[in-house]
Image (cartoon, rainbow, N blue to C red; front, side, top):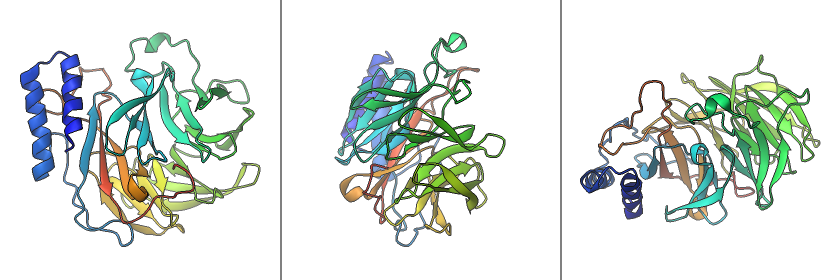
Length: 347
């Protein structure tokens, strides 16, 4: 366990006024986890069997970050770090190659999932005040939207073509042309000029994660227990919907990533399912918690970073919230890979 994580946890606890004795206890828990790989409260066994060309058997997960607020839509950065959205604090955070945390962007208006294109433009779904964990949720006056947040801010859309609001947005992937594909019940595309078109309506898909193939010619969308694929035309419209893969006895398909060989990595309740470029099931990487997002980064882009649900609280037990209050605690783990992430774009 990196020392800076222990210090970060201490800092969070100190700001929360829990005291030094509890802080020391948390540090000792993390040190024990690093040295003995013992399970922390809320964790599950995650013994990696190995997948040829993907990951070696016996590779260990490393816990690098934890907080009582979300870490969603993680994306690798060109310098080997990662960025991720923290909706409740209206920020996008960054972990550098040494796992040190920084505030990367502020005033994100409830930024959720993040994407970045090859030009370095940062895209986000902005959920504004639609999170039930936020105190002003019931009277949310701001429309959810999709925007480019950096290097210059640009609103892409805050409504569908019929004028209806976008709702609580989920995931997105930049299309490389100034627009993005996104999910909110169904799957959609917003162009650089703000035109929103439907890829799959909510009656035909139970969408969550969304991803493009390395060549940008295939769009993948999770559909609970499966992944569907679409051909992408030059104008970013889609066709030829088909079943691409099934999550081998699992459900809750969520965030996705690709590697340089075109393999698709899909987070779900039990772990990370890996498929070849033609949809063949290659195996599952078990995870210590339920994963929701993932990204390749680090040296040579051979480290997989994965935000997972839950975190250890200041009392050394699994973090809990009062009844009726949504638990947004999350932990980020990383693991060494044999496979390399696709280097043609950040994710």
